Length: 237
Length: 185
Image (cartoon, rainbow over all chains, first blue to last red; front, side, top):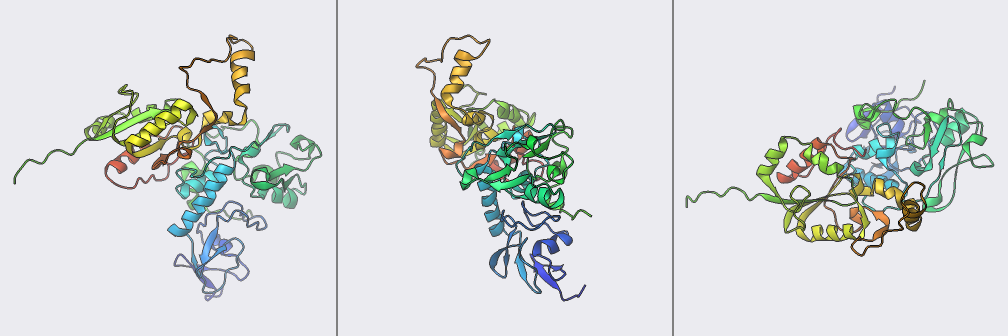
């Protein structure tokens, strides 16, 4: 690696290879930039905006912006974390995120990111949207109340499983969410299997394998053990 | 000149459980013997622990539970009027929690099913006593009705988190919960 290909992230020198995004370079250096829709194994989506940073004084998405030599990137400043917290609060009021009853609690990226950014309340008025649950599949439960529209299941089903089981659809703030591509709209009527990559990609509690709910007890789960900022995602080999 | 320094005034604290399950109050008691240390610093006004029925002027009001009926709203406004600082304690006070799970159902349907049509229950009709507070159409968190100064999530919030928050507030610090104390479940 050429010694000159570095940029500054919160004052720390981060090396990168040309073509890498700010996010990719940061993760390779073990530095956490808050994010929800980004995953090292999949094409960039750039929809959640949690990974917004300030590059030379201007806002940009670190998952889509390519690293350039000498960039001055601000990441965990109070100003940017405040904005990220607001984005999280909007996600929390737009869905039905009732953590005490959710099997994913403790393993959930949305929840862990909210802990990291010290989100103490939803701040905004709640929407309590009506969203369905699809329990038709023998091995997988879908609870759309928790969908944050990250698109990871769409990408995993399309790019890895080759099944295109999921698509993003609906209109408006409360109508838009991930849908099932079978004619009936039910997961049981697709070729979806619990072994699919898409079955384990959901960062929140929408796609849940049945009969496994509390196999790992609350309190001993991924983000109970260490905060999300200390568990930077690495690309699957 | 050498007048004795009066011991600092004890802060007055009121607590109430609205549309909650008293689990958050149980979690307050779960601070165990630290409650004796707490009682050196505070005295309780209206609270299920004192059975005082109305809130007087207080330094801190702690509310558990969201708003599911007209009386809840009345009590909340009484707290906001009397308390310098208002704390929303627990999931229900913050986002409606378990009671808010009825928000997806029509209120009349719920009442009819519970009091009239449900198999194996007494079909006495929907209660209509004027003493009963009217249920709200939907359950709401506190911050939708009054300004709330501090929030402590959890179902219930762990006793250590309650202790940390109260001691931070009493010491005049901005409450700051580290990893492990901030929990939504």
